[in-house]
Figure 1 (tube, rainbow, N blue to C red):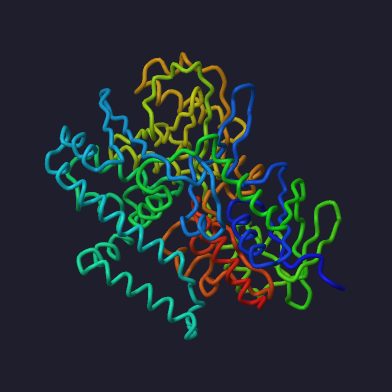
Figure 2: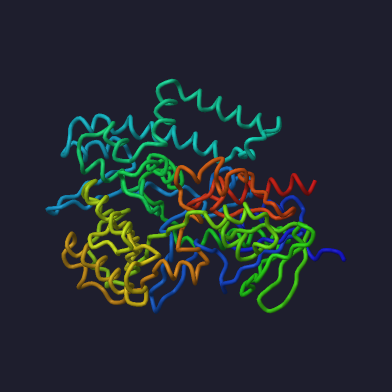
Length: 502
């Protein structure tokens, strides 16, 4: 029987939509299936009441420039935003404002340390070069070790040459920094705890790690790359504009998007993907299937252990997720008193580490690390740490604890904030899972830790988007290039599928 489509993509998140656009651009008949009523996955703007439209999970997003160029994406969502400041709220009412312009940021740092002010421009330049190398690494397909073909080896050689071209000093700095803790890395550069904590906060954003955890040097580079610096670059009209533009581009290329279409199972016959079975019982066939869901959900939930080798099943079940972030959205009367830009409650390294300590024991942080953005009357608070697996109680009751602790932490540093509140909406790690399809509430589809990056993401020996099931590919954030908003993993997976289809 002839296939209904050339390609089916499971999940209309930004990576799924990027992959679909590349496939449709190559002339393939593409269908994207989304379980929710709206496409976008993590990249959505939703209404939680009158005048209460929020960017649900991410305060900003920017696709990699080469993806924007390849897909011919245009318009305000894809235009470079002006650099907003990054403001750290310190104890005693002090604030450290780090402007996107290194010279202005250095002037603000001088209040805390003249030495650090002098080093700041050099640090920013180093981070930019390190991020450029990481971007090149994310564009490079990772081979399935230990067997590396000539075709896979040549891109790796080009990547190593790019690393060498950083120069001896920055090459060693970059390689060494990846395995370091943020505390160690920032200590190499700065003496002021306020400056070190402000930078280290970015290193732990979205991951269940503290600034003293090994590998947070890598997550600092990763998050710096995806944001283009410390601060968010907010999309006018909300991050949902990016998803809408991707959907429109796909439709213009002849692709289809179906919402309220939950995939119950990926159909497999003779170790080859045949299509999908929807929750309503409909079967849709395709030559290849790309899953934008996380690896564990894809293999264990949608394919099923019976179709996979036993050792592979064990590895898939062992993917470390461990989400520990929540979101608190606040509708205010506009008199919230928060400064513009990206605002962090990260007064010291010790403060951040203590916030992380709570997650180790299944507890909600009493003094949380917060990252706050504002859009008009809306205040959106990223809350860490709030572990998916609570040791005591449940999320039905713990949600109010998160809300209250977030509000109290901001009121302490911005008196009058509490009085401005008109409405709140809190999204817990359980909501991340049940509503947005993020297993264990993990925003990255798998923790960005040293044994789950590059050749080992998502699983050792399976880093090239292919799977033990022929015709099934992974294109979500849980594979190499993924984590955060960039579209890199969707692009790379589509290219792998196209090579095989040819």
